[in-house]
Amino acid sequence: MRLKMFKNTLFPIITVIVLVLISCGNGTKSTKYEVQSTKVVDGDQKTYKSKLPTEDLLLPTIEVGANQTENYLKLLETKRVGVVGNQSSVIFKDKNRKNDHGDYTHLVDSLLSLNINVKKVFSPEHGFRGTADAGEKIQDGLDPKTGLPIISLYGDNKKPKPEQLKGLDVLVFDIQDVGVRFYTYISTLHYVMEACAEANIPLIILDRPNPNGHYVDGPVLEKANTSFVGMHPIPIAHGMTIGEYAKMINGEKWLNNGVQCQLTVISMANYTHQTPYSLPIKPSPNLPNDQSIALYPSLCFFEGTNVSVGRGTNKQFQIFGSPDLNKSHFTFSFTPQPNEGAKTPPQQGKKCYGEDLTQVEVKPGINLDYVIDAYAHTTDKIKFFNSFFVKLAGTTKLQEQIEKGLSEKEIKATWSKGLEDFKKIRNNYVLYQ
Image 1 (tube, helix red, strand yellow):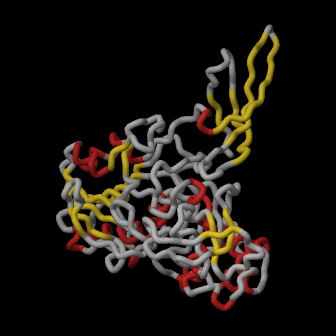
Image 2 (cartoon, helix red, strand yellow; image 1 turned 135 degrees about the horizontal axis):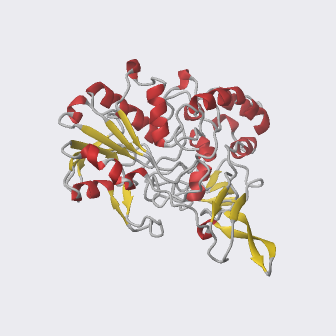
Image 3 (cartoon, one colour; image 1 turned 120 degrees about the horizontal axis):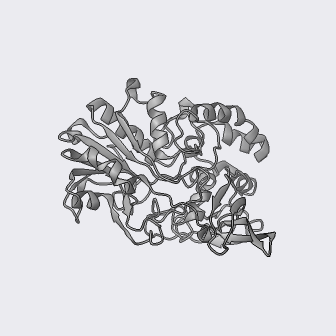
């Protein structure tokens, strides 16, 4: 954790240094810091130590790119604008972020109120309002609030077609990402950049924090396993904001035929990759809170198995279980049922045995122990993995290693060379320390 200094108004003469990040996350980020302060009492300097939760620290407020309208409105004036966004594309009204959970306006509504000529909206997986199932086909339509046409960028139409971009002068991309390779918003970013490059349309990215941006981990994707849940040779947790990632896509010439997009990134203020950030709006239906977002890089492997990650419950990506897991080893149980974002959840109506992780401390890095333990205690190893697991992992090696009984430490040792090589490339594109 990078050292931070701030003024504590409780003492007349005081310097407070954030020394150690003590703990993080139990459903919400109840991060605590050890704080050392000094003051002069009767001519003697005395030192005090205490532990304060994050919300009590007078740290600089993160300002997301969308809030910095002074840096991009001038780029949109007199232009015909398209917006790539979803429910997370908002401008906060309260710059102190005390009321983020309700005090904001959607980017599209704000731009229209500022007389920006927004012509159409492009929506990624889960749709413009963010309520569709994972993998569900999203239909084109009209936004009932603004009447603007909405074009789906999921299913058969992942890349904007030339005719869909016709009549636009600029595109604005504003979507909250979670910093994981198989989270498909960065795949949508790739195709949007490619379409803009081919149509000679500038793209403006309004940057947002990466809640998993404080570490880099996982196997680097092998080209043979490229898919929509993994398009680039990066590890599972890449440690970049979506603006930084766009710069990497451009700089590494990953777009078709090596084309490059006319890219402008509206960066954030007061953000570092070590800055704790609690998302005020869930980025997709099955990532409802900080705990689920922190566990997502580790638990999403189960999507390539017969193990449920809690879709169809109110603890999505905070629990896992299957009817095939040994109930003597796993005593926690749940039964998935249809709900918002999971109309037909895996293992629907079946009692699943597994583990409840809602209260665990999530440490930086990918935790393989969950999937290793589940495989070791399944009653049917033949049916445990499916073909999607290799796509999520980005390599055939991980499944083979788990099947052979390798430990997490042994598996992670095989990632080290790829991670070091990636970090060298990543350093060329980071905007924040």
